[in-house]
Length: 93
Image (cartoon, rainbow, N blue to C red; front, top):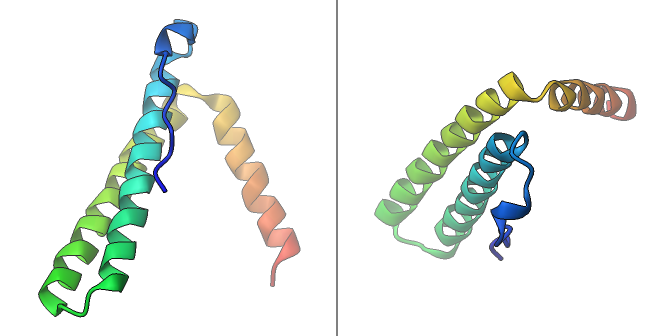
């Protein structure tokens, strides 16, 4: 299932639009990773598997690029990512 991206970005405040654009890019890339990995799991053709795996990996790099830009612009996101990391460390082995 692909995510539904907001249809009316005009409703986003001007000071938040760049962060919203980066998040939309991340959503699109995450959808692409999910799609390519699901397709890879469906086929028995090893060449198709190789290509889909490679493309999914590239999409993960794109997610990292969008995230790196987002973290430069959104200090709250930086803090919340760190909080989430700490929670995981406390709750898991």
